[in-house]
Length: 464
Image (cartoon, rainbow, N blue to C red; front, side, top):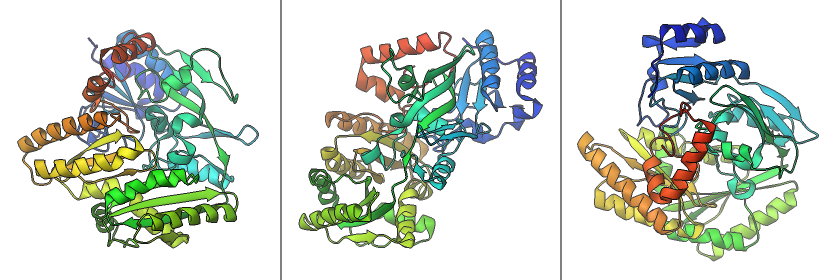
């Protein structure tokens, strides 16, 4: 189906980007064969580090002519194999495209290249008294990767997800053609929104080379609440009651005691409270201290009324760092606690979170395996991890398959979906097909064929 890369192809790639930016053979680091989770591995035939749109356009024209598969990679922080070159070919690394091009304070936008890291963008706009609201947990991810997966994060409760902040994109099509989708306009009803179709497409339709993103004025005040409950049911039941109080927190996270202990061990730092089985962590922000305090007090009183053990105000920088650094380290902490793990990134209705989490606890007992979890209680996005620990490879493969089958089936029964923010990639595509059925998958495949008739861009992912 695909042609192998020849010495002539390598020569042409070197002419486009320079010899120093083309890596082949034994010089290719094993890191390029997997993403952060590491459960899917496949080596590219060559790695090409690109620096601008024009280079990508020429590379894609070559790949289109020669029918060579191309997979785009940013920081490699994904968890579903979306940036793994499962068909070999060219791995196109965009980390050198890391310029913040423009801050437009009149239109409230920032224009960036795809290799800019989330933490770099957040720091830049904050220095200029603005905020880029999407806040995925992995701060070292690239903006291109965030857009490609429609990343959500902890502030999605109040501010929405990445798609809500993408104003315009410059993209390279699989045949090398450069397109501009969207614009700095605040409204757009000019035909189908191709820009929104690209957001969340996981690099299967085209390559993002520049993005115009919305920003907002930086809220002047913020405070967090750490609220312990006797059990997860009580903690999760508090969430819809908080929404009915007409207060909209910036974030509502849930966490269990065992996950907190993993983070303590991993970071070597103490959490403010670890005596209780379940916690919700809330943040409030706004432009006046009075309003933020009113919202915080309303929710604090409500939580105590409905059975919270206590309410801790997290208002100093030291406390914020202690609590939020632990929350940010949950994934790495769980990963460090086991020999291997895989993730179930489902999203369910908020009022079904407790039922799903209890189901995973029962499943863990039945299967004889650890299944820790944490997630975004405010929007129902759960991060559930199956841990291998001391299981043999044969036992692990069987249990992993059985656990995934049961968890995705349960999520669907509860009205949920396969992925809340990490995407489908290679790892979850069979579950997507099973849940959506033939017609939606055929529509997706039809869209893919219109964009990429030769199926050279990130093949083997999402709906193929």
